[in-house]
Length: 216
Length: 216
Image 1 (tube, rainbow over the protein chains, first blue to last red):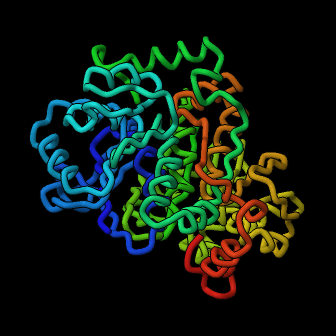
Image 2: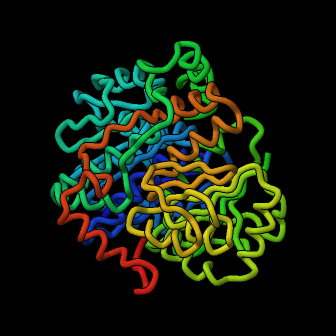
């Protein structure tokens, strides 16, 4: 089973590494980080580097595709070779997935047209422009397309996906192995729960697609 | 504020990247991945590479130290130059922290002697041999030493630490930015909650320190 996690410069590292930590533990999984060109990609803070082992051209038929978010994925929305690869890979995939603003890239490739989907909460509204129905849920599955909310939700998405691929017992074993029994010290992880002033503060940092987003 | 996340070959990537994703968003933080020697370190699955920008010799006085887990940290338990660096850095740190089996390295450096501490659940018992009192909690703070449970708990630990360093409002803003409102699809993330057969299965993969652990 071939799993391809797409990476690029200025990605949000946890978007990719959360799913990686879960999916790399799947029995029989052959997981690669892939990019337009192999090599070192630097995360959005500039302090973390991840290596893409393979080019997208070398990975034509992955069973699973994971597209993470981060401001560096905005150029991909108009990158025709990348979008063409995504459409072609999606045609043969078992599951095509995204974390955070990765769903915008799936949208730009036409993959979300007519589907329910999610994204980082500050970007949810943009899904409509790709023909998708935005859904404010942590993990949204519609057919073989699974989209996740912001950054940390990739861990939840990947456990959901692990169960689809290998059964619940395997997924639960992975959850126990990574001791994923979350206990955030605050209840401020979604705009429904956080103080409105914090929601505004984060929204200013994540100003959407038109205004050159700074992070996401 | 200088934050040093120690990395090494065969680390568990999420142990380091979870805290990184939180702490790199702290205003004024200068975060580095550090190692005995700078360069590329490969995670325990061999599919993910992280770059250490600086050697431990270049980072003598970090404000915050984060030591992750992974089978690759076992050699550090007897690595005198590394343990000496940790003791010296700890003497001047504001906070000295660990994720997963990173607490065993703190223990080997003598930093946990007389303190309450935690680790990945399958390794908790080993803390006693370092003079620590093992505590089965997700995040354990004792003085300026903060230890976290297995792998994914580093996110919770880092939010706790972010509040200590920059106040609750900053920590809550970071939590909202990474949309950390976890919703695991199963309730199998701790040995108290998982099916006993899964606990045994994971314990076989994490056989402790004497029997050449395979993962963790």
